Amino acid sequence: MRQVSDNLKREAARMALSQVEPGMRLGLGTGSTAWHFVDLLGEKVAQGFECICVPTSERTAEQARGLGIPLSDLDQLDYLDITVDGADEIDPRLNLIKGAGGALLREKIVAAASNKMIVIADVSKVVEQLGRFPLPVEVNEFGFGATMRALKGVLLAHSAEGEATLRHAADGQPYRTDGGHLIVDACFGRISTPEALSRDLLDIPGVVQHGLFLNMCKTAYVATPDGVRTMQRGD
Ligand code: 5RP
Image (cartoon, rainbow, N blue to C red; front, side, top):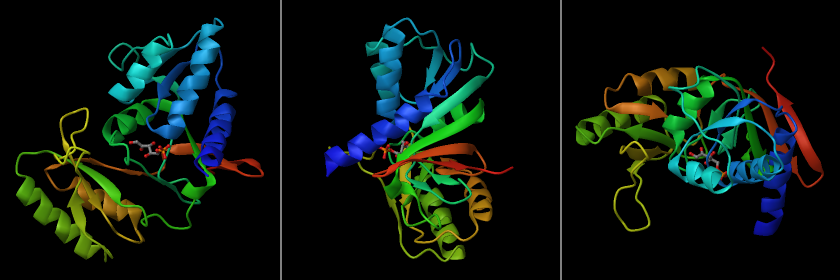
């Protein structure tokens, strides 16, 4: 089953790679699907393909370096052509939940600096309405108690069906992002007004960023057992 899902992820990644042209500036996403894109790009680079890339996490940077993919950052590059990344949920408007891999802040910074964001995923990520997947919220450690109380208020105001919980790493310690922040996973069940929820979360001073990616993704390549489906956002 896992092998099937992995094959689908690779097919979606292959579609995204077909959009990449020589000399492009690329954002490299994080997660098991983005891993395939970086791996395929590495094969192309080994054959002499030229590009320059900004990774969205230390994990992706390490993978890319290992494959000889040239890396840069958003201090050196003033924009990127395309960012290719995975997602935890994709709705019909191509709004997303991201951040299960804990890289949502860098992912959002990189996607926002890109002319185009392409999402690659297997079909299990497509939903009618966002919210079944817990929404990751990156928070500053300072004042965590106050931030948590404010977050609970936002959950209540948006009729959340579940709780907000601090994410832990495998060693039992609070999970730390590459930026040293904490992550709270907020279980809404259904998110009926994502724009309002986004504003309410960002209004909390201790919230660094959240995993709702609204109006950012233009194209999603969704791999199904019958082939890769293209979802396009109409502007
Ligand atoms: C990491 C992310 C990932 O893109 C998202 O979690 C999807 O990961 P995967 O491709 O492993 O399912 O947002 O922060």
